[in-house]
Length: 122
Image (cartoon, rainbow, N blue to C red; front, side, top):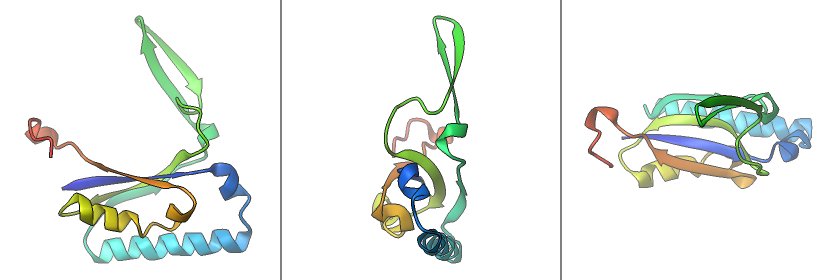
């Protein structure tokens, strides 16, 4: 089954990190990505640009609106993700525990809905 590991963090905290601490975290991400690839679990992943570069699209009463930034005002924002293959939610959670920024943010683990088997909710 496929799972999306969504990485939420406080951008202000990340920006306040020393270059050394940021370097350590990025090295941890490289190690984690390499481990996922070696296990054959890595399907994709990307780091996202800062939330200030986001555009939200909505349609209400037939009209579209575009706004800068995310829909919700929160301290933590989606900063990146991994799309993985794992045999179970427990296995996906074990991968999520290894993501370096879990110590300063939140990793949301969500199963991907298999649209070919739409009735199967997992």
